[in-house]
Amino acid sequence: MPAILNIATYRFVAINDPAALQAVLLPRAQGLGLKGTILLAPEGINAFIAGAETAVRSFLASLDDDARFAGLSIKESWSDEVPFTRLKIKLKQEIVTFRQPGLNPVTNPAPAMTATELKRRLDAGEDIVLLDTRNDVEVAKGTFKNAVFWGNRNFTEFADVARVQVDALRNKTVVSFCTGGIRCEKAAPFLQSLGAENVFQLQGGILRYFEEVGRDHYDGDCFVFDERTAVDSTLSATR
Image (cartoon, rainbow, N blue to C red):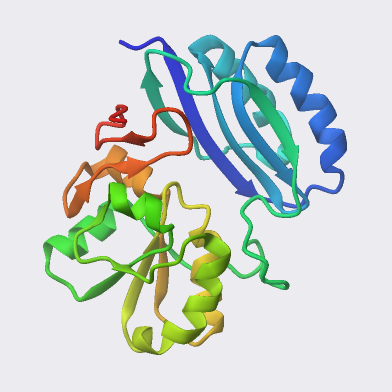
């Protein structure tokens, strides 16, 4: 079994002093020999880190001791090497840049649909619009069969395109999806605000879908933001 544990996790939660949190987390992660990227913003945390299993789990346990991050949903995968060159903990305005003031996934979330439920509905042939909120480079690596992609080159552009395209989603069941779920925490409620009423977000994104149900209804691999480039339905690197 590969020796390196890779984890991805995020949470939208109020962080009043991201810089103070950075000062705590950086030496802790460095001391454990971890590499990867952690984003901190007033709206929450977004982390992609890798290292020896004991080190990663020790870091996650320390996060769990903080009430703001207790019980984080963790997506795990394994690799032979650490897919990051260094450790970075960055302070940002948003943990996923969208630039739509007033949008708050904590207070106004869209409903989530689990991977198992989505597969059940797709197996039954239900009429569902699968909306890919990722960018063109990611989509080129793989996406759900018959998914709708609006051609946006980045996530902030998605908002502009959505304003033009939203009429096509009215009176339809829509499931938005992305790599790990974080972008849809904003995309789905944003679509609701534009008048698309029956919008869900795929819980845990493509990575959770792969983990729970495999490749059914999906073509290709999933682009990831590290040196692995992409993973297949077993969450193994494909490059």
